[in-house]
Image 1 (cartoon, one colour):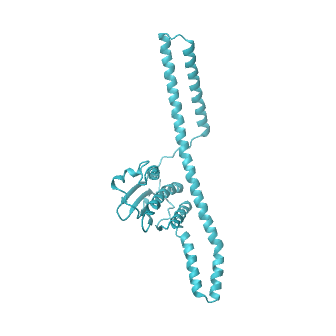
Image 2 (image 1 turned 120 degrees about the vertical axis):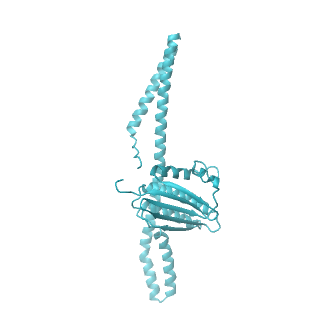
Length: 289
């Protein structure tokens, strides 16, 4: 079971920072006054060492608290950024659905008019065009997680823009997934971004996204027909800064593995000359958990 992280109190953090820095300033002041006003006898040198040690301990304690707070702040800034991305994707999906609802009556009127004029071929072609537009959105509405559906819509639109064939086979509603929806979006979003980058290098770029479920877990498989990942890189590629795209990349997979470790999930990689597949297993909610 995932350990629940305690929410940091801003007031408590501020008090810690004030107290620690005040003690450090007092210790530094005593140290300076002692050096300036006292004769450096053997006894005074011993006391000087004690003051220096106490000051060093306090400085170390203060630095530790500052670093801890900085890491917490960095994590929360990243979380806020990811939530903003998910929110933007949800807004885009909502706008797309509203546009389709608004245009639906107009489509019906056009088809009705064509049928009245006995322009059956034109009516058929018009319906095929409308179906294609509706299908591009409806095919991502496979789960009960609105944020995840929005992510798929955004990635589907990205693939269409880059002429990448994006095929989805989703056989789970994901309603009982143990991971929060925004965490799932972060994990799968990173993997889909990598797949899009890799598939872009293929002659006939294709991505297959599959979701299946078992009694205890949901499995997400992202396959692309991009370049083979060398065998010697298939373990190190999950380390920060390691990427097949060269220097300056490689943070996505490291973040994915870290998030999965926190959620009790795992990721595996299979790559050959035909395709590269990342498989993610995430636990489902079970009775009594």
